[in-house]
Image (cartoon, rainbow, N blue to C red; front, side):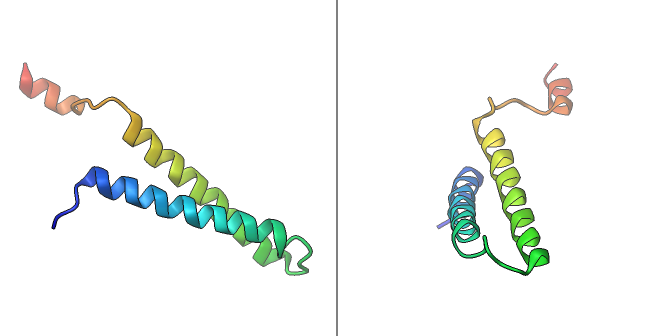
Length: 76
């Protein structure tokens, strides 16, 4: 069975949300008192990147469907 692009985006977003929630929870609980500042910063950067990626996927999937500008010229 073939998955559509929309289903792939929805599934990916759900997986990324799960990963981001797990990472945030772990950062709050177990890493808060960590002495390894470099790794903690790296974990926070990964979380920020995941959050940005989720926002991009949400923007794409919630945006009204429009033809790219080059397709408008062909339709005229």
